[in-house]
Length: 310
Image (tube, rainbow, N blue to C red; front, side, top):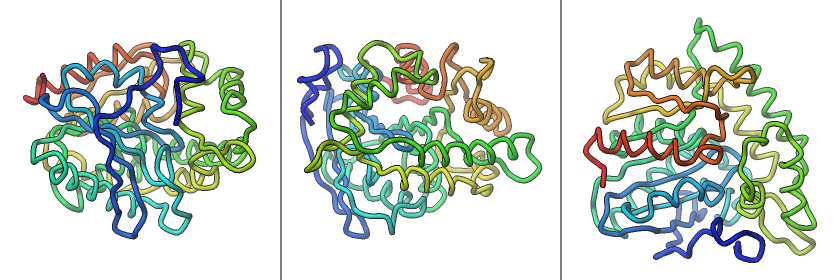
């Protein structure tokens, strides 16, 4: 993806130090990118449903001087080639994350890897931890939309929210003459009003791919909707507190009048399991794009707390 043709220089992600194409367990491919300081503490980053990690560049550029920064997109997202519908599910995401984590040691040398995983990727990492044991040290969950167990005050609200998000995903346009068309759609929506200048264009470039007749969402809307519809597993939440390794939560502002369930869920999860927790004021579920410096300050504080800081 050539970002430089469309963005101000400050928002153009740098070329990676290394790029590796990984074969996943079912034959699909994911693209691993290495940025930053190879001698620094290693940190992996991934993204939310329908998004792509290059869209978070305003956030992860803050770590490049000091941290060995490993980026990857979930299958059918971002820079990964499309691989179809059949295995686009939570169980396969879990296995994909295991392949990615093991490949980091093989490619870059064995070393502890901290993780900063937003939304969907955080759930995938928890499923991975439950199945395979501690893999991320620490695992920092950013606005995790984990489905609450039966009887929880937020379960019904989150269930309705996932239904809404599924419907919204299915309604969104998924083909464009130019990425700027998608950026214009985002700028016109109230939900994205806190994004700084240029972030809408960066997101549009990161989440689309060129086709024979224009541009299309890298993650087709039917696949995005499928993951929202399937995010109703109540068994993860009760087990988080007993999972191996250090886990921390960074949440969006739970006091906003327009607060969405993920901000409330992150706070409740942390309080219920006694996990370290930081709430970022005046931001929504897109907190790493809206307030990147504040989120990075919280992340780095957790990395130092768990002995992984630079």
